[in-house]
Length: 106
Figure 1 (cartoon, rainbow, N blue to C red):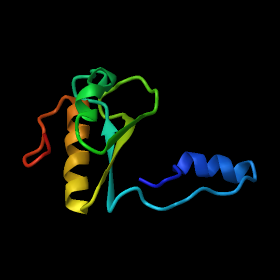
Figure 2: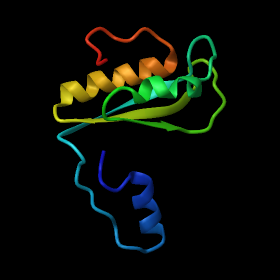
Figure 3: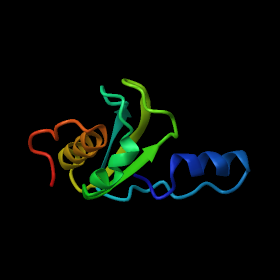
């Protein structure tokens, strides 16, 4: 949710480069972890559905899908925190193949 990602900041620090801008890219940011679906399916097959949620970024760690295993996370930038949280949960549910939470974005 910042102009410069945590990963990029880490690289800059390790390489003794100037740190990047830390300003938020929106009014609010929410992150939801992505756990392996109960049925063991691969969330990579549902990325397009998650990216249809406005403001969503999907971060997958390249791990094999297994029920309950942390496979990545989604980050959503919005103007209001409640909206960011709702959208992040929506995107994570779409990746997991779970029912989309009530009140989720379309």
